[in-house]
Length: 206
Image (spheres, rainbow, N blue to C red):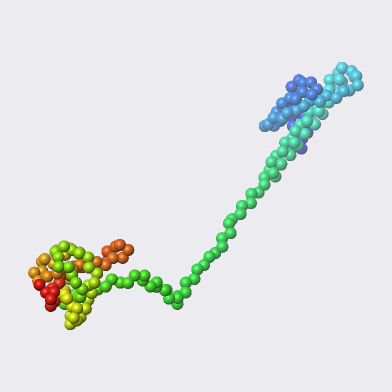
């Protein structure tokens, strides 16, 4: 058992039997330290004093080792505490954006690219052209509205049936002499379609 003086005060250390250069483990307070034993040479002296001298030398060597170990341990603790590098974080820069709508700005409306469908013929309307004298539906392209007093007024509308192209719908009107259908399409899509029940005028009357 050896008593050494440390910066924290006197401490008692128990060293087992060892030789010069041995690394021994000793308890210091609540912890343990590793000590390397150093024994320096001395002139020959009486046996009684030799053991005391060795004990003193061993004590000195042990004290030096303990102090060095404590200093290294403390330095290690200090380094670990100061080695932390602060982390710098950056936030993205936000650029504000704004928009402005002029309250006096009048929106422009694009002109329609297609003409509106024509109004259907109403009862009493007269038509020119020539309709085929046949019970089979045929395509015609020269039928247009004219004044009923015109010399080329050949037919008069007596009934208009919307949303159909079925000429047989005119059979329900007993006055019908001719049936004429009209279809208005845009890009192949049917927009309006009508069937007109007609009577002939003048030489076209039946």
